[in-house]
Amino acid sequence: MLGGQGDEWDAQNDMVSALVGSLLMVGVVALLQRTEARPRFHSVPVSLAGRDARASGSEGTGVGWGEEDAERNTFAHSNARDTRKHFLPIAVVCYVAFWIALAIHPLDRSDWLLENLLIFISVTVLALTYGKFEFSNFSYALILIFLAFHTIGAHYSYAKVPAGFWMQDWLHLNRNHYDRVIHFSFGFLLLYPMHEMLVRSAHARPEWAIWLSVAALAALNSFSKSFKPSSRELFDPISTPLISVRKVTFGTHRKTWQRHSLARC
Image (cartoon, rainbow, N blue to C red; front, side):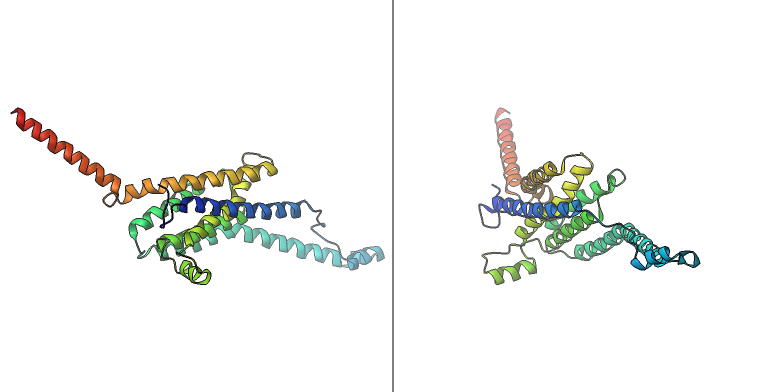
């Protein structure tokens, strides 16, 4: 059964949370696309003073106001490029420091290892594919924010995250719902990177890519819900009922076979 946290519909509610987050980000992406479609002003504006200087013939005596504006604008664009270039290394260093701090003395080391499988796989895939496909800084920021939220949940085993208890007391909930927040963030924060990858790498049409992203995230979320029980058996086989039953069954058959062998002798 996929139910957890004392709720038989827990898995379904988590999937609904991720779907709601994805649909909200659909509106954000549509708004961003509409903003990008608007006509933009020239990147190097020329001031009225510069035009007046050229009209009066005084532009040859020195640098006019239009040229000064152009130089300032070019310098601003250069700074923006430098900021975009250094954003990812700085963001990654900050996240790694944050991850190391929360990797020290987690509440449950086996749960911590299980939850960090997502981080290990995600970081490995992003690192191996960086040379072939590079996300925008906005997408990297969304991915790192989600991984930071997930890192907090892994440290506190999700059920004991302090922020979840604050939300429980404030909204009068029956339990700590931090895991529900993470599923919502999964759909909300990762839809834009998924959409960007489909548009730029798979060359999908933006209007189709947005709904393909929703479907892909829903499928990934469903897979993660079914993957966790199997992973828990891998990391904690002693406390897993399935493994224990197999051990007992195997031992019983072995003793039965030994009794038959002795009887034949």
